[in-house]
Image 1 (tube, rainbow, N blue to C red):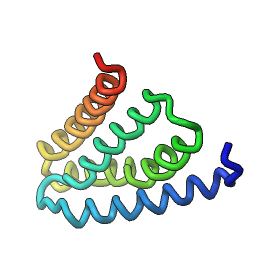
Image 2: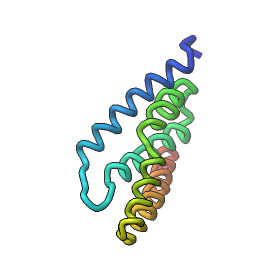
Image 3: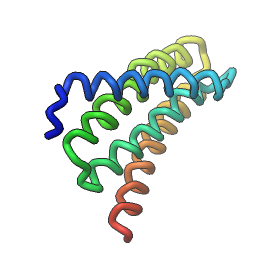
Length: 119
């Protein structure tokens, strides 16, 4: 252990993740499909999986996994945007958003495993 309070490690990572989340949302703008949310959820899944599969230190997992990935990814926005698309009649976009997010996140986790384990 580093002697740094774990709450400070998570908080620092959380601040970094929240800032990155905001920047991705500003950079990726889509009218129909919430591409910013899909992007952060897929990238965050990859980063968290890579950290865990690589056997990263407890402090690094707290900083980048719990803190940064925790505030970078967003299940609440994903849920809200999917329901909003469904309720406004954009049911194909709602299904694409849901399936695309889950398949993309699962694929990202699989890719992280392959990269870490060199298979």
